Every structure is written in C-alpha cells, then in structure tokens.
Amino acid sequence: MLKEERQAFIIKQINLHNKVLSSDLSVKLNVSEDTVRRDLNELAESGKILKVHGGALSKSFHYPFQQIEVYAKEAKKEIAGKVIGMLQDGMTVLVGGGTTMIEVARMIPDSLRSTFFTVSPLVALELAERANLNVILLGGQLSKSSHIISGAQVVNQLNEIKVDLCILGTNSLSVEDGLTDSDWEVVQVKKAMIRSSKRTAIMSIAEKLGSDQNMKVCDLHSIHYLVTDLHPGDSDLKEYARSITVI
Image (cartoon, rainbow, N blue to C red; front, side):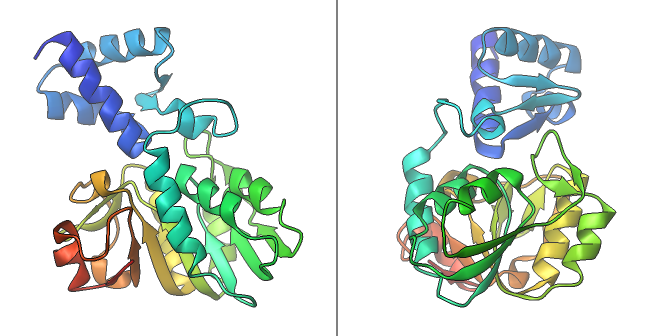
C-alpha cells in the first residue's frame, strides 16, 4: 500500500472513531508501528490530525467549538433531529459526549423542561444555553483524549442515579459484538451510564455500523434504541431491528 493510501485510511479511521491507536493501525495496515508513527507525524505536521501518545485524535472531536469541519456533519444533524423527537418535558436524561451529542444539545428547543446529567463538560456548556433545562455535570477526572469525566468518582455517582433515558454516541457497533470502544476508562463510564438508565439510545452514523473495537461496552440486547442517519427500513438496519428499536 502506498503512503498516500495508508494516510487516507488513517484519516478515515480517525474521522469515524475519533481516536486511533498506533498498534491497531499497524495490524489493520499490515505495516510496522514505526511506519504508522511516521505517517501520524506527517499528518500531524500538516495539521490534519492531533498526535497523542500511542495514537492520534480527530481535530473536530477535540476542538468542537472551533471552526473545524466536523466529519459527516449533515448525517449527525439528521441523527440529532431524531433524538430531539424522543425528548419530553419532565424527563431525566443522561448524556455522553462527542460531536453528535453536541449537535443534539444545539437543537434542543428552549421550551423543553427536563433535567440533564452529563459526563461531558463540552456538552454541559451547550445544554446550559437552554433556560428551562436543569443541567448537572458529574464530577471526576477529565480525560484529555475523550473530553469526558472518567474514573471511580464518576462511576460511583452514576451508580447513585436512575434516569429515564441515556443517550450515547458510539465508537463502533455491530450485531455480533454490540457496542465497543478502544478506551478502557470510557468503557467503564459507558457501562455505568447504561446501568443507571431505564432505557438507552445509541447514536451512530451509518459508516460505523458493522465495525468493532477491542473493548466491549455491552451486547446489542442491552440497548433499546438505535438512532442513525438511515431510514429505519433500510436493509443495512435489518439485523439490528431484530433486537432493538431502530429510529
């Protein structure tokens, strides 16, 4: 594979999953980690990605309030519009982070009266713009890579609440492996969020469906709703619809 092809693949993976590990890319590309590191260095120097220890991050994910192009923005807006239709006055909602969740927060009507718990300071700032929302930011250690609160403190807080609906973005989702991620701390927080909720909605752009990471959050049957940019009757959603409600 030519260098240009490798780097295009790397950028696509970062756009889809927000974060990539050098070790995972080495396996997928069938090249040495030294080769991957050189590619990441070149992409970082050209301003296309953010290089971190052991891998790289998406710039749009890391700096969502700056004028950086968000990958699949229209698809994420489509998902956000569907999620807004699930929200009702009086609900208690628990939400994660990510660019799709920020789109949801920006679309919430000023008239909605609900309580939102979140592990994302960035999402909390958007939610706080809505006068009738009660916004509670859970506390703990801030992850510099995922921009959410992680660690034992936030997991303990999550264990003490029970909400009507949990809304999460996804790193990867498949029928066989369910919801998966590549960050151990994020996995623990997502597991606790799902346990704290009566119902869970997972948001995913179509391109992430059928993909998997090396750490499991939950099986498909632990999820109640799948919200995508596809029409619910799309053939790509047929297998998912056997287990969960597709929106």
